[in-house]
Length: 237
Image 1: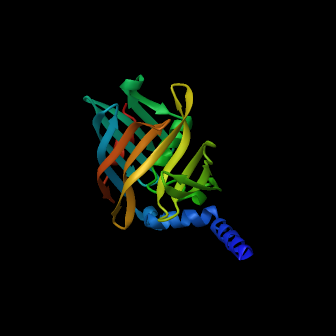
Image 2: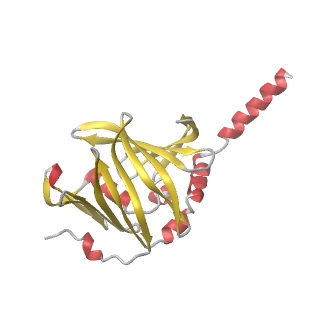
């Protein structure tokens, strides 16, 4: 009986880890509506709220899928803007010492490019040339997850994704970012999953450093395949 029980346990372990990173990613993509469905969306407009230090600010993000992104946050009458189009990006943020439109490069430009896609980098890793690796399992706040490492083709940045084993949805991601010259691990926690036109988006995401939330984004409205004037992505002269 002991030998039989041990054999069953061994079989269960082998079965659990017989899944590959690609198997898990495909299930994750399917749970969100499918990669093909995301790729067929031409554009999207997200409106909601950006919260930092206990204050809420209006947020608008406009995307031409895979080509362009513009995010505007209205902070006390001043606009904080991040913009990307066709390989180039610019920003305005008076609160960070950038009062005039300024071109971005390096890792920041890569981040803008990633955000111009409606599908996640993990979901579309093959087409974008990223590398993935299954690191095993981890329990996250009582939820059993698969832990997948993605290494970006664009800048070598490593992001770890934690995907629920029960419903194949994304629980959180973790990556290292530069904050005022210091490298710090940032966790993004995803919640409030809703469906729009057959695909799903998380309406809320909390960004944490050392377990403390430093910013929250909540979307109140998502519009797909909307008309967007491409002139809004041009750097002001």
